[in-house]
Image 1 (cartoon, rainbow, N blue to C red):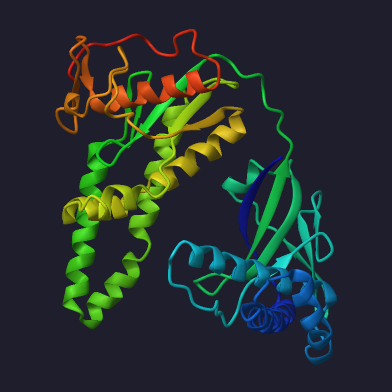
Image 2 (tube, helix red, strand yellow):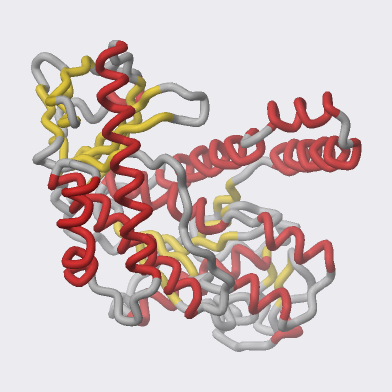
Amino acid sequence: MVTRTVVFPINPTEEQRDSLSETMKLYSKAYKHCIDVAWDMEKLSAVEVHKKTYRKLRKELGLKSQYVCSSRNRAVESVKAMRVLRKKGKKITKPRAEIIPIRLDARTLSFDRPREIVSIATQKGRIKIPLIWHKQAMRYKDWGCKAGEVGINKKGKWVIRLIFEKMIKKPKRTNHVIGVDRGIRQAIVSSDNRFLGIRAWKERERKLLLLKARLQSKGTKSARRHLKKLSGKLRRFKENCDRIVAKDLLSNLMPGDTIVFEKLTNIRERCGQRRKARKKHRSNMGRWSFKRLENAINYVAELNGIYVGYVEPHYTSQMCSKCGIILKSNRENQYFYSCSCGLKLNADLNASRNICKKWRIANGHASGLSVNQPIVANYS
């Protein structure tokens, strides 16, 4: 089952806005109360939180029972997420929010597809709001609506997020496997000899970071106003770059093909603090969006029936993709790999081929070639 979340701008009437605002305030109060109860529990359990909060919230707030249960579940999820972070050694604080969006389910949300209207349960009864179908939403018009969330965005406008779902049958896996090496300088290098990413993106990112630093050091009223205008601009730019790279990478693949990544969990700690990397390298590692790029690729691959696999990253950069010898000295620099067997090629391309080979061996696909063999050239 594939799910996608789509944001719709909505224009409720004044009466409908009042109903939604009142429901959202009560929902937020119930959420905060459940957070306070769950935060102090040694053994967190949704059932125990329900026993301690349900009757009290129903009596004091008069909130609909389904929303009481929804706010409780949301609070338990938030506290569990904080405890996971604490186990990882990170500092945590109790979740606090004055107003949170209302989570909707099958009982509190109904979607009239022919008339393109959503019906939402509020404290003053159900309200019906027409949807504005924009370009991004049109691709999911024939999907089923599972759940949603209604609230106010950063600009103070009402929006509803609908979760659409569709059953997509996975095709039979082919023998075509592509290894993918992600990097800071080169976004993607694949084992089929493709180098994806544009150099101008790095220059654009550098200019935005420099402008942001100058405005922060300035500290004037106009500088703060400019910073507010720039807020999120770099993030949106990098997200767009990741989408472009993802589409380019998957454009040559067919349903049933496989792409393989390295598991880069905790890569910043392994290659930063422990190895005492230089400040410039640490800052580059901190801004490296390898996970966001991976998510963008997964997003497109899921819809197109392309499989995604993972391998451990150990020695992929030091191993020769031709003879299999592992020597750290063979990687002469960040760009070039040279082996005594005669292989000379780009270091990231060599790594991507090793990723592909590792996955094939681990999954019983050792026979057959997944890439054009080998281009002996210096790509640096």
